[in-house]
Length: 361
Image (tube, rainbow, N blue to C red):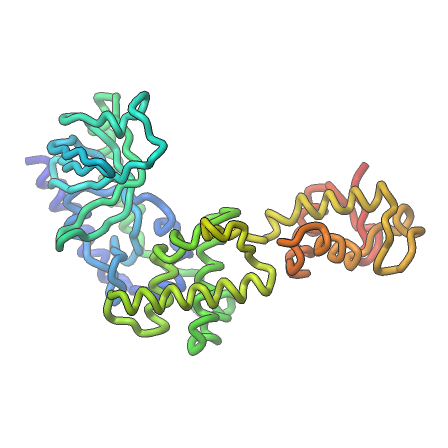
């Protein structure tokens, strides 16, 4: 009875919050909940509405939700060759979950592979639809061994729904007014699908803070797909729409590679490496140290005499960086400047004079 009242209260909160204004996909990355595994009940997963006009994304109030976390008892289990299908019951409802097994997973010391009926588990994954029914495509399954874990989860969910989820998502004022650089460029390029796709990819990569990514993961990322579908006005989800999305992603990645923002590091795996300041900074520091130590030729002054006294010029650093590795041949100068600023802030180097740097001994 308590679970039913609690579930009804949660649905009332969600309905009340749905009166908040909704925002297009280009703003979703500004919502911290979008990048989180949002803790919900099974009933919530089965009943929360889809984000209007964007199939595959759901909303808690006006928060765009893609990833969720559930806790409940395993009440049905079907073990297959490639996956595990099980039902999760938390007292508010029953949600079907599907966990795809990886080839390197072994039986020993693996709770997921040895999953049993009646176990209390926490499941993280994405809401998907299979044969017209919602389910959770699990990314991780963890068996709970604390007998009080479920009670604490009920209390935690009451607190989250009354505080965090209840508070509407509101993008910063400068973003809504178009004063933010990335969002402003999105507005200016609304009629250019490649530019919109490119900015959506950059927002996705900045949100993940990852150094590499696979094309197959990128084409399934909701915030990127929604931006493309909105730009191309794709209303149907079929093979043709999927093909158009992939083609646009390829064009955007090709331009990003030409501009030195990404690098195709593995053609077979279709893996890309992000060439941002986080990747470039340690290489820039090593180049400055080597140039300063070895007295290599200064391409800017066309001499060797200024390294010790005057420091190493920005143009020499950029030239050496482009020549150091093939993947860095097109790295943007702005990224190098950002790396130098970070190194100065970390006291790894110092600016001797305008655009001339030396490593700290």
